[in-house]
Length: 443
View 1: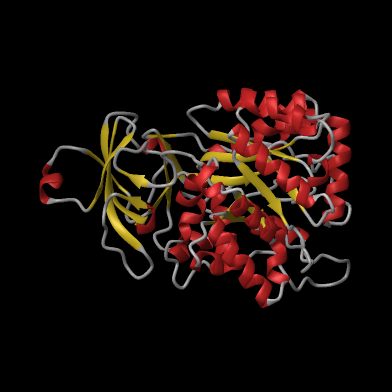
View 2 (view 1 turned 60 degrees about the horizontal axis):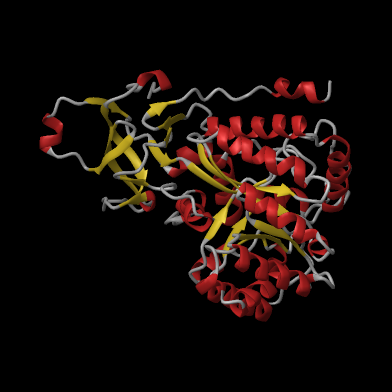
């Protein structure tokens, strides 16, 4: 195709011609899609916004309009990454996971946080992650912020500063993160709530089968309703069939009337144990999740790294949750990056195309593809409340990602490292930050 970021007009009005677009990602226009859900269209961009998307008419063809022929290259809206950990990112060089297990990750992160998470350290690593995500084509991120008592006053003001600094490039949200046992400690929520109110955060925690789970959920739901917080949970990140906090969260959402009185959808992440449970428990839980209106995000790369790992034994179970069955019940489902180069996942770069490619293979988002591309675009935009994100539609910002691949097999067979990212109608420099930029943290 020969399209580089210097090939696009810098401003004004122009046409992206002969673009392949996933029909599920187009809003407000009906396109003639093929069996793979892909359609050919022209996209007219004016002063940084999408003017029209559709088939070019004879009158359009006659107009004197700067045109870039994409030769059927695929176009996505910029990505929405609904579950990340920017504050943990890139600590691997000094805090490797000793054995690749979940307990190993917990211990390594706890020790590193205690020893190293100053404002300068966290800022440097979070900013590196944001630079990577931006270059890959992400326009909105929700991150979880470790919110233990000693870290709250460091990380939350820093998050607020970065959200302002990245305004117009990446829309940022954050949710607090601690274990359910911390939630019930005397004075914890009293300290956390003013911080979240001041810095615009959401309320969350890690749920597991603790004796404190019931009381913790009661406190979280009542606090969120009283304060107007969004809720976002890490849920049952284990293959223990006895872990069923997902069901308890759904029951709490119904009991508190969250769908009628809450602040947007409750997001629940991981939900791995569901894949190990008996059919009757699965059906009961899936029905409750749908009735409660929860939105579910699976983290396929991180969970494959951590789950069912033991030395000298090949993993049998891969830790992804039951997205097909949830989707069939009308539950919004998503996939996201989760951790990057930290003890919970040694790899990753906040490249949502990599996440979607992995999810397609692991979770079978294909044959047919249908509207699965919404899992990294429109669905997380709606579930998290990122207005104007995740779709290609007239009136929205021209924030697009152009790939050389023309079909799903072309797109997902390669990393598409030479993609073109357009923000407000202009192509950006997609040079990724160099890992050497982080050497100052451990030199």
